[in-house]
Length: 523
Image 1 (cartoon, rainbow, N blue to C red):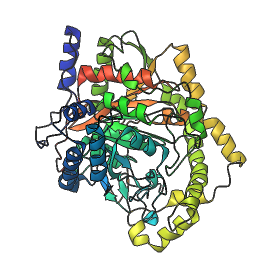
Image 2 (image 1 turned 45 degrees about the vertical axis):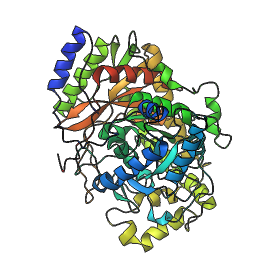
Image 3 (image 1 turned 180 degrees about the horizontal axis):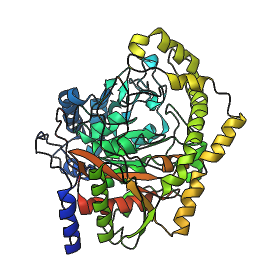
Image 4 (image 1 turned 90 degrees about the vertical axis):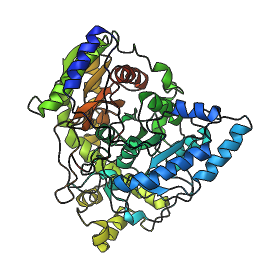
């Protein structure tokens, strides 16, 4: 989450000064890595000009990981075939074949996404060590078709942070603790912890995360990057270790809105094995970058969330300053209280996740090469290997899920009906107030890592409404509080990715708050 210059006009310049005064300066202690803050477009230009090859680029990132990842522990496994894949793509380019904007671009993906290669897929769980998929997840096959180089896999909160009621985000029994690149004593959040930290630390150009509720948005906000949680069904979930068929989705994590927009278009597509993607036909886009306009906020009506006024005063001041930025960019601001209306649905959503996790994990493990074949096996493994698998927190959530019945249980059906009513709440609010998007603080600044007591909140989170509704959500850096990034969220209705991408891009270009992290020991 970064900021610097705010606007080109006099009104914008005034807002810039106000916002800048609220942001703690981060000293320029950043390393001099040649690819720091590079974009996909810039890399493609270098490869077109013969200044770089994909193989050289891949080697530079592998060397970067070998040096820098010792600090943050974002990468759980490297692809032993990355350099040979890059060499093949260089041969194709030399022969005149360029597959598209991702040709030769190294990508990291979260370790709950199947790859039909030499890498494992474990969701960070030691119980799944040795699990190698027989084929790629659908979105991984899309990446390969687009010419991306699979660099490796990223660490995550174990089981996508659905194991314990007192877990520590960004920790897994296989991968250990991932750290926030802005301050190594602080948590990058989760569950897409490694993906967010890796992109922020310039270990790759782009990464894939997954989200059920906040698992892309929160780590993107905490690590100062852009994250998109798309409409459920825009991207296939086939080959991704699941939590919830109702709420799960993958999404891009990048340093710029344009790179996220480009990546999203590559991943989108109907998958016959994922029923939810059928709804995306005629609604998805192959190129979301066309909506990246600096004028995208002009004339838009934005529902700005009325947040807790008793929260961190620095976060509140930063938020207020950036709402003024939205106004200066031509947006009309309407105050709303979405979370007040959707908060009553959280318990139902939590029940849905328990039922669907049991159902989905049992189905995944039944076909996997892991030694554990169902949820009960996982629970038994963890108990038998408690020192390794559960040294800090236990598996209360897994135990709760194991007790749930099937998806024909009336309790599940009632919870599903209640939770998904978030769609009606959002639609009604947007229609009645004639809104183009909803906006709020993505999350508070990162908390300290606490493996004894587990996670603690830092005052704000805007993930749940869009998560329960299955609606699109993007976060973009809006500033810092005492040196730690904070993101600004844009949410809209189903299949409205193009609209919120445009708004986020306009805001990003006016504020330019993204900075490379300094890897401070603590803040």
